[in-house]
Image 1 (cartoon, one colour):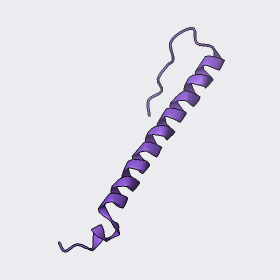
Image 2: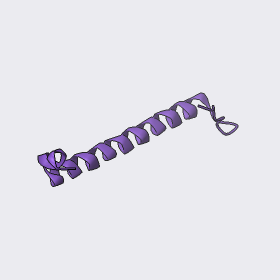
Image 3: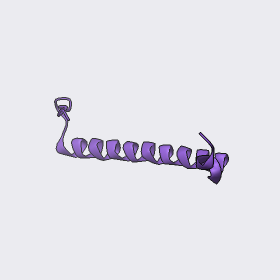
Length: 53
């Protein structure tokens, strides 16, 4: 993965906070995807994989 340089003048504290903010956003997005997947499975029912092809 390419290293992206932060804007000039950012302190180490700002870099650290930005990194943790990015991690939090990624985790929230992953949780939302899992939630949508789970809701879809619940709505379709457990027998969705037992259908004839």
